[in-house]
Length: 450
Image (cartoon, rainbow, N blue to C red):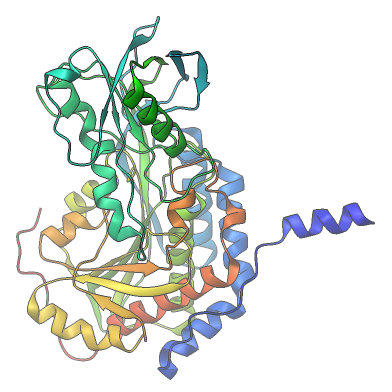
């Protein structure tokens, strides 16, 4: 009997009290309805995460995820289409890191997404440490550079991510320019229990491509202390590789507008994930936000403007889904594009980017949410639209613990609270419905099309 109780508790989603309660009755109605159906939203997240597995571009999990989301949209009554996207097909392979001097110890390590492999025999070299703001120079020649840049504390945590992620994104090319043979990058997180976080790395044209790997916060700190005391050597072995580009799809569903069908309010999230864990917060929660918000809007009836949901391919290591969508649809009349890509925490704020007339139009609508508003926003997938002049909005949930799990084996569905996830569904649905039904004429983009 005790075993049955334990198993039942493990199978149930977390349950936290409501923390988002908008004052505006119209918004509260949407959020209350979503919370009342929170088990449905969480069950869909579990179906995606458990049914597809990881969803890295080019993987079988990506294919399974596309079919799962397509089936959801069709079951909810939406016209649904699969828009093809050619995506990169990077495979992680194996990785090992061994401290060889001043003593021998195996260390946890992950290849960074897009990294090249080491030679089959690995690379053994001395370690030099690049601390925050410290320039590289001749001392990096022939060495493995360890970038040990801490991520600053604070909420919203996303505000500290940009500084922390620079070394992961471009450190390999910067170090290669000074003759380094490989790089190790401190995981981008504020909390760690020995966890290694992956993420993408990109090589600058004309610079040598050297292996790039991620280490835990604890490993970065230990190596830095050892280097301060004397010579340190490590051996890095990795076998990542690119295979031929693969076929993927942006999965698109919509509710056609009854009065202004050619004007589009887009809501989006990315369907892919890294090949660790289940991508539950990043970005399974966003996928569920979008799908469940669209379902709730259809149940309410036809809005003035068309609401289009897009589940984008290949955000994590290429952004080809966002670029393909823009190439196909950038000339259409997008009134606004909203993205959810910051996990399943309780909604806290909105980030909005647009011309003054667009901000004047949307700010009163955002204010009615009882959430704070900031002057920058959007998301990676909708960035081509925003750059062309479309009003961009990003949902900003409570992300205090988001980067504890981000890009790790720990980003699993059990980390997502059902109530908080549903609150995000309600907030996204309320904003989308308000924009799709706002009276008068919405300011349309004035920038160039595709």
